[in-house]
Every structure is written in structure tokens, then in C-alpha cells.
Image (cartoon, rainbow, N blue to C red):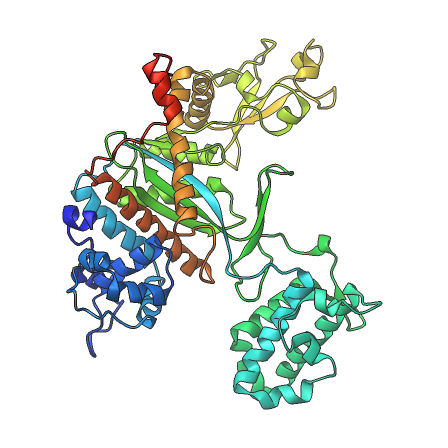
Length: 533
């Protein structure tokens, strides 16, 4: 209600007729419910973490919602199914990001966000809307889903394939705890049996010309993909269940037939602090200027296996497109890389993040790293810790610069053991970034040990509170929907809901009464021994 009083409506119906929303609704037919109204209802729904039905009820009976939405008191609202259809329209293309852009344009016009300030980014894991499956359960569920999809339209095609045991295995959800409960049950034999059953289905489809259309069914395509990943055709024509080491990498492996974009990933060091999950990853970016409220300015969603370092460029591209280019971009150590540092230099953005000082073989072997070798870019030479000068500096195909030292200098060097583990007849060779990136990286490494840099970097910690607020309230860490597009839409709506919550606190001018002191504190104050606040 305070946001409505201060800023007025955040969306208008005209916003949904241009740009990314131009084809969202057909020009012909009966006019639908106001998209501006549905957009605000959807944001409020995630603000309070409500289901579609509860959100529709709230529109009809909550006076605060009616005020915020500009509805008459007697308005009876709409059916809950409208919200599902509206989200399906928003999930197409880049409409989710465009909706956040609309909100930020209003906030920018009101002076609540601006370009050139500080912004910070962090990520968190998002669990997929599927149960976690082991390999056998994933294969069994894929076959069950394909059978269900075919039986829905062509049950007669399935009847000749039915065999004894199919009802136990595929009549309900596949659980190895149930199927391997019998004495002498073997997991490998069960996997081989599921593989044979799946192959009988695909062979029946391939041999029947009238069933060729079934290859276009989504679950049949997933079934074939999973069989290619987990089984191998032997010379005898049988299927061999692959060992774990033979499976494709986690970034390519399907973890559930019900959400083919969900991936398994881990983060953190092995042990109590490590996290493993199946799903995706959400990156939240917010402004952090001291004189303005901290508001979410971008939401980026990736598959779970994609490292944080890949998010810097797309996040900054969207911020620039929205006219919110940051002067300083604060991240943790997972985001900076040579390419990102170079891209930030070109954009005029200062990337404030801890840079790993020792990496690669030098870190593992406790030898000198590239930072220990001063470079004279004008002369095209590099000096080693012992004082020797390089004999060549030449660019490589991957964009790095290869620096080589003479074996005449390296062979008798007294500190050779601390410099290289190469064969005695070889000189030291190292690879460094081109001049702009190498210079910026070296400067960042030197600055991060200064008190001034540490004081500035303290502002990054605030994004942890934003992630916590998005998790505890709207439920960011659990996806309601399947598929990366719908999950991204949910993440964007949660980011907008966080903005509404913070704007409400920003516009709240109510003076909060101070907390009543305890009796012990009052006694200590009376006798002059109270601790200063």
C-alpha cells in the first residue's frame, strides 16, 4: 500500500503491447483480464509465497491487496487458473526479464536506482521440482513416462508389449527400495531388465510405420536419449549397462525424465560445508548505494553445473541495457577471470572481487607463479625472481602470452627447485594474460591486501542477506515449476517481490517505539554501570 501511495501503479496495460510483450495477446477476440493487474497480483503472490488459489482468494477478500491493485471493494476477483495461463505467457522468450525492466524503469524515474553506483552479485542453488532419482529409478521413470504418454492416445499399441512384471515395475512410480526388496534381488539385473523393456518399446515403434509419429513425443525422445547415455549395444545385440565411469559428464547427463534441464552439481569443499543438489542456479544482483534502498536489479538463471564465472558478462550486459551500468561490481572469488576482467575494463566497470593469487601447477607444487615475474611490456621481456631475462614473449592461439627463459640461465639457477619442476635440460615457461588483463589482475592482487580495499569489499556481504530474504520468504531455493524458463520466471518474480518488500520499508515513516528495557538493564543504568550501546 505504501508503494502504491508513493509510486502509483508500477505497470500499465500499454506496457504489454510493445517490445517483448507485443505478441503476448491476440488482437482479436474477447478482451482478457488486465495484464498490468495480473502482473502485480503475481508479484504479490510470490511476496507472500501463496498458491494460485490462495492468491485469487486474496484478490477477492484482502483489502490491502485491493488498495495496492486499485480495485473496488466489491470486486470479486477472477478464477485461479488465470494466473497459470498468465505465467505461461510470461515464460516465453525474454518476457520475464522485460517485466523486471519495466519495474526498474519506474524505480529509476523515481530516483530509487541509478547508474554509476555500486552493485553486488551472488548465487544460490535452486532445487528442481522433481524427486531425486538414482540411475535405475531415472531409467525406470523414463520408460514409465513414455508408456503413459503413448497409452494416453494409443493404448492398443502397448497391449502386445505387456509382459509379466510390468505392472510391478511401471504400474506406479519406480522405487528401487520397493523393487529390490525381494531376496537375491540384483540392482544390475533390474537395470538390465529395464533396458530390455525400453528397447522392446523403441523397436516396436521403429518397426511399425504407423507408429512413426510416436518418435515426436517428448517422453519417447527422452527415453532414447537416456538409453544412449546409460546403455551400450554389444556385438551380440544385447544391451550392456554402462559403468559409472563411462557416463557423460554431469553437465550433459539427464537426471530426471520429468525435467530434462535439471542437473546435478556440488559446491563447497568436501565435508560438512559441501552442498549437492539437482536443479539450477540463481544469480541475484542488487544496488548497494548508501543513500538509496538496496533493490534487485537483475536475476540470472543457469543450469546447476555452470560456474559463476560465466554469469558476469550476461549480468552486466542486461544492466547496461537497462541504463543501470554500475561503477563498481562487487562479487565473490567465483566470478572474476581473465576474460571477465578484460570485459569489465572495456565497459568501464570496476570489478571488486578477490583474485586468486596462486593457481595451477605453481600453487600445487609451491613454486613461483606468474605474479612473481615482473613484465616490461614495452621491451617485451620478463624478469624472473633470480634476475634472469626471458628470451621470448609471443602470443598464443588461445589469447595468452607465452614467456620462455633460456635453459642456460635456468640450469645452474640456485633457486630452480622453487621455480620449476620441469626436466633439468628445460628452461622455465609460463603463460600470462595480455597486457591490459595482466596489469589489471596484478593491480587487483596488490589492492586486495590493503585496508582500504577490505573496507570497500565489506559491502559485498549484504547480498547474502538478500539471498536469505528471498529464500526464507518467497522460497527461492525450491522451484515450483519444471524447466529452466519457468524456473527463471519464478526467480525474477521473487526478485521483484523482494523489491516490493524493501520499498515498503523504505517508504515507512512510522516511528517505531523503542524496546522496553529489562529490569537488570534499568538497575545497571540507575547505578551508572550500564554498557554503552
